[in-house]
Image 1 (cartoon, rainbow, N blue to C red):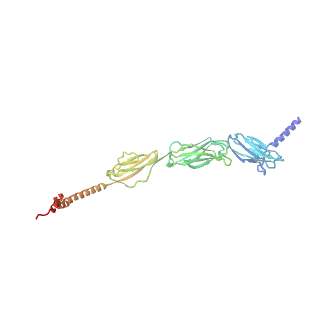
Image 2: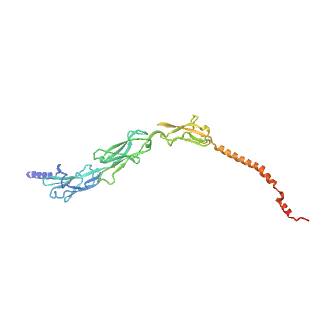
Image 3: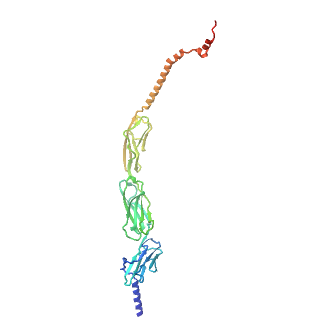
Length: 367
């Protein structure tokens, strides 16, 4: 029985000698050195590290490497820690040694266990259907089951343009689902634009060369706004020559697509219901004020166009030129008939035609 007590006391002393006390000094001069000094491990992956326990102080003293997971082995004063599959979210291997006075010098290995998001989604908070120009809306990016969330950076995008970034203050090391929000004020230029978000784990030194990034699907903004006229304003008045085609344009953009109503100078509505009103050949009856009303459920815009039809002098000019040409022709014929032809007739000798006159003068005269 006495020997049993002695064995128990010796065992307890050995246990206490091996036990790591809470007063471990991690600022000692000859402190253990881990290689690498920091580990970043994806949940479920293998990992390993080595620890040079000391240079001189612990050669004849107790030293060890403690961890709730993995296997620790010794080679001289170097400890090796290996894990086939790291499935603990919090683990901090401790490398230490004790001197003869039970002074304990130690170093803790910083291990970050991470998990990329299972899914990332984006949506407009508490809103469905068309949006209104000039209103503020909230984009929400939800990141599911990511760890550690404190190292997560969420960026919101409008098309290819980054709008801003959000981060979490949550220090939970295990996977969590968290939502991030960003406020935007929409304009008509946002109609049809795609918004999305990106979740990136910024794990720092020791992390993957390419940080884990997961992007959301896109959400398209449908912005409703009243019609707005396109192009430059029309001159006042719009001048057109009589007989020329007349084309009036009041094209506008709007959401929903606008409808067009034309009112003619007479005050009666036009049969045209498009953005362009065409008159094939303008007459003086087409002169006056035209009104184009463009509207949708968001509102109506009206534009007036004053048309001035001017007389066309081209026909008169052509007629004058034709008349002048005809007059000149007539005068030419009269001149030919009364002046040129009589003179030519008086000098005409039929004998010259047959040459008798010349031959008669060549015969000798009889004596």
